Figure 1 (cartoon, one colour):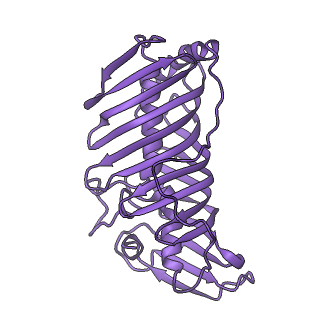
Figure 2 (cartoon, helix red, strand yellow; figure 1 turned 180 degrees about the vertical axis):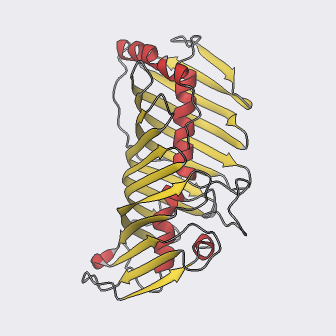
Length: 326
């Protein structure tokens, strides 16, 4: 997915970055305990053949899940269905709007200003001393997507040609998209982004110590996280590493990428990749993506090592629609 921020506007960020640094703005922590969300139990769960499908769904949700549960699609995948990657789309939306607004020439230190968003709503920005606070007032820059809430940003660094951008955010925002449950995200993250200004392809990495989300009926937190999305043409390669605690699991698992997930920009699910989630006693589930069809059988293989001896005792094939419903 191309990030819908024009590169001339990105280039202007370098001017703002110099202004923030000159005012004493600089780095910041991507951590900080999220407030306003009740964190699920963080004790590692034992991975078993019984809970392996739920562990697998939870492990994938922060990186590829849609608003609410993972998007359930009947029939062929369609752009009208709820879009996947709700968390990273939220973080990109915060960064996109911050870049656009902070680079605007009317931004003045000490003055609170409000400007309209591209589709509807508005953004209010308040420079105060060495920090900036951005309030999203039902802001929509992309049809069907709305961002509400607030974010503070520090440590902006940008290349003058718009080929790179980094910053640290503290957020409490709610991202809504047509046909999906709202996703409220609270906590901190840093973004490091490099882009090919000729093609518009971007590599975006999100890191932090704690980020919580109310995702439909489920609440989950990721800690010590790193999620990278590399976009080349119509293909997205996703690498993820984090510990996720979830109300659905009533505990946590540690998730790593064995083989990067890959998905097409218009798809609801990845078409290849391997992810491993580890629970207590080194028990594991290995999730191998075989295909992206939302309803066909055998698109995801789930293998379980319940006793933690390094050998997967069994495997079962699932459809995405089965995992989506968990």
